[in-house]
Length: 164
Image (cartoon, rainbow, N blue to C red; front, side, top):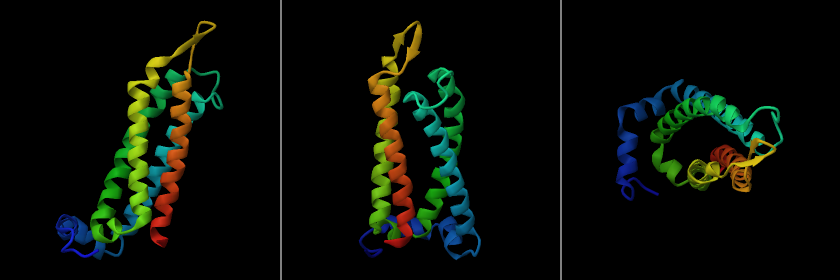
């Protein structure tokens, strides 16, 4: 894939920040380190919620309280992961766009986004009450299980970028 075929990607690569990341000795490895740490925190915080929804963790705590505590952390570190990922992408946008593992990662991230949207707009509205306590509905459990699979897939695809 050449720059003539994708002028937008070539334009991204010509932005000053992208050039700096590409040419600096320390910028890319620093961004990658921050990106990996942010992803670890994103996935860790999401999995705590997912595992609670599935009834496999923190069973004495309400799902709602776990979500209220974890999701603000998730969104903050997701923003960091998004910013660091975007800066790394911009540094070699054409190369990344041509990488099958990167394309898979983007697709899986989009699916994870659809799952989050489904969870918050539909599944979360289907709480069930058992013995006076709110419990996760089947839709919430399916979404939680899908979330775990999608994030494992995102991590794997991200790791494969350097090898494909």
